Length: 615
Image (cartoon, rainbow, N blue to C red; front, side, top):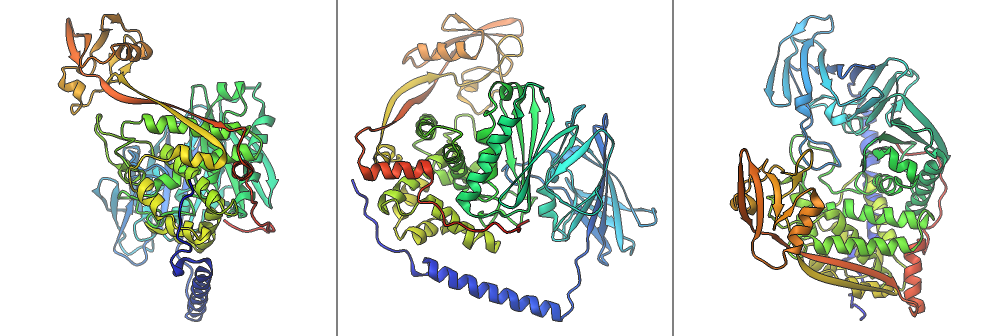
């Protein structure tokens, strides 16, 4: 079935009109710059930090010197959250103020205004020094300085340039995206947002560097570094991801980039994006077994340097560190980034094309099995990430649904434009008309950008599938690329609680609002049996509830103190979905063109030269 689109978007959103608007904006900025020069605008004041890093020093001493700017009182704060992680963090529990001092070392009066904010009496001095201590989770090999959890800021001086001096005890060293100076211990950033955005890896570091597209890319490892780790294979993956994404976006918005890897002994990992770096945690044993184990998270975090760090919602910069910064576009910021991570692995040759469609099927399985699959929209999931949801509240993962929306939107654009336009073009458009101008997009601008690039009308897509909860058209859209999608759906019973396996299986931190609590279960109850089956672990618990069939109550035996209790627990009924996505051998030439366009990145972006530039 061919979908009907109205040709053209609102006139003000056609590329030619936007280009004219950009030219007017640049002209206005030029005039303002000339006026500022004529009036003799002075350089802004600078904030200077000093921190000491040494082995066996879990509490780090910090000195921060702030300009007083003629004010009788100086207010400083510590962020409550960090960009990229949309929830409040316990940073304030880790910081202890030792005192405030004048330039000559004389103590100054200071008081705590509220949790995480302090006020200093300047006594007329031009500068004020705060000394404080930061407690970190580091080990004998070093650790990571998280900017928002380390650096205080003047509440009226977030635009001031920042410098930091690292006093590092050998054999430790540091690695960071901060800009170096002629002094090897001194680094700088143009303002506090940039400064706090640059994490610092410190300790015994292993360093590698490669050059591509006119810039140096640093790969730094810390932690458990096994000799048998195939470093060349890991580095090959990083390089291929970088080259593929730079060619996709035709933009390098940095002068140097830093991959900061911490390798641990456990399983799993994760990462966080920054303007010209990313800090990533990986499992050393998994990486030894499979040097490609970190490819996906590396591709995801690197693509974030465009999508969310520069192509961003309006609210995500400049940041308000004391309040929640809500947006309905996290599905695009995170989910579409995951989509491009998958595309990057396929287009770079790190994965076979079938990986793209296997991922598509796996994401469908996750989304359709979520408790809120038919109730929670992608926009609502993005907005509500700051809220503490109840244990029985319907929910979805905006990463997962956002990745699926990226898949579907790309398929629809390619199909309706005869594979002459794609979501790639939309990302490059947003990068040109928002990121490079330093502005964020508004609530409706994503849809308008799609329409401006493609000449189509995507209103129904955004209304139904992004803002709404209409079931996603997997099978219909997948056929555009000659892919058959099949879903097997059934209802299953799941345990309405989790268990802790540190010793004997015990009920883990049960929420008082949950149905299981209402049925009599309590945190700490030792789980003895379910439907007469002894409990040894999570899989046995899951199997016992699922095998109970369609009964309304499941018999659970627990030990609470010296008593054994027989409880009747209502199971959580969930949809269980298994999806498959299979390329059709009899696909038409047009369908094959869409499929190959996705897999190979066609039509390719116009080529550009890679002159030095960026941050």
